[in-house]
Image (cartoon, rainbow, N blue to C red; front, side):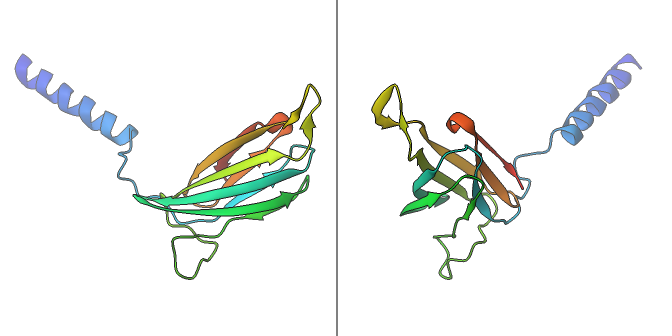
Length: 137
């Protein structure tokens, strides 16, 4: 009897863990990827890379993004190059401020690389000081 109860409790615990922890095979949704400039200074999107599995496509942009404005990236691995990425694609964006660091005038105030894994529409927000947040939009 004790063995049956113990077996039942172990099976129940596994079932509860499985239901509360979705597997990584959960399908990601298609979506757009955009960058918003909330930093208060002009930034330059230098380039971005679109990755899907082992395939990768880089794109040099050198596009100016003024405070309060957005940029929507194109899917580089699809023939039509639409704005819709496949779920699970990774978009890596290289950016920097156009303003120089007052303590080190040879370097930008901030720079960085932001990665977004597509699961629905995703936003990369560049905040004050170059800090970023990446998440659903």
